[in-house]
Amino acid sequence: MVMLHTVNKSPFERRTLDTALRHAVKGAGILLIEDGVYAAFDGTVVAEKVKAAMADHKIYVLGPDVAARGMSEQNVIDGVQVVDYGGFVDLVTEYDKVQSWL
Amino acid sequence: MSEPWEDEPEGPVRKFMYVNRRAPYGTIYALESLEVVLIAAAFEQDVSLVFMDDGVYQIKKGQNTDAIGVKNFSPTYRALEGYDVEKLYVERESLESRGMTTDDLVVPVQLVDKDQLAELMEEQEVILSF
Image (cartoon, rainbow over all chains, first blue to last red; front, side, top):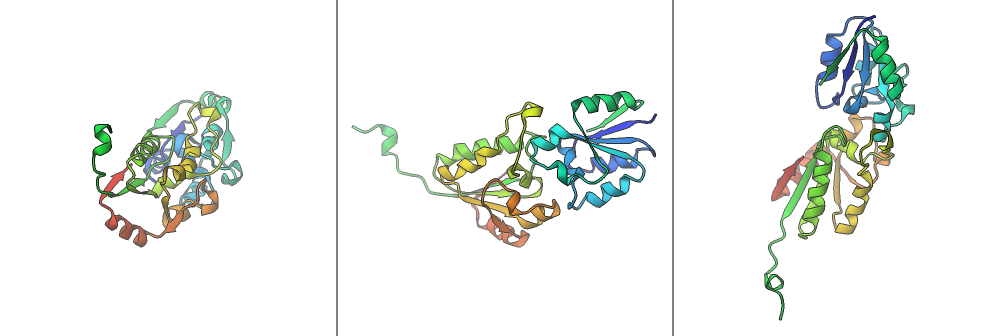
């Protein structure tokens, strides 16, 4: 299987998500963590970009980081999968390797 | 006899603005800003707080940090009123681009657009950016 890319920067402040998406091959996974989770919600100016990326990538978001920021899992974009820390570990084992974009 | 510091004349009241532009937990900026504001509140200055860009996320309702092992400092913003810090401004464009409204915020704020905010900034004597 291909690579899992983790993104921990806000898409409103940094270009990290764009960079990760630009370098992710088809089928690669994208896991949004820390301030990266702000990309996962509907109704924002970055939501369309994330929805478009779902054509080529499975996108995950870390639930504890969502809750910490007071964001609602109900507002997570349809198709983006919320995972807990155990799910994070599972993803790391399921994908070949991990690239942490900082 | 009074203590020496009690005889000192009160200094001038200056207009201080704290500009918050970072999300709350990914970096230390938000917490540091809040601490500086609370310290500065003791000096009875004319204090304004601005939340813009990702700074609007600092005052998002419903923060629960139990699972990440970090202190949730968002309730502290509700205590600012008790320190006479009552001028809280949120930039409308920042809130809207994140799909949020003032109903999502833990404190009552004054919503201002970018032009109003620019004028408010011009009125200040000291601006501290976090």
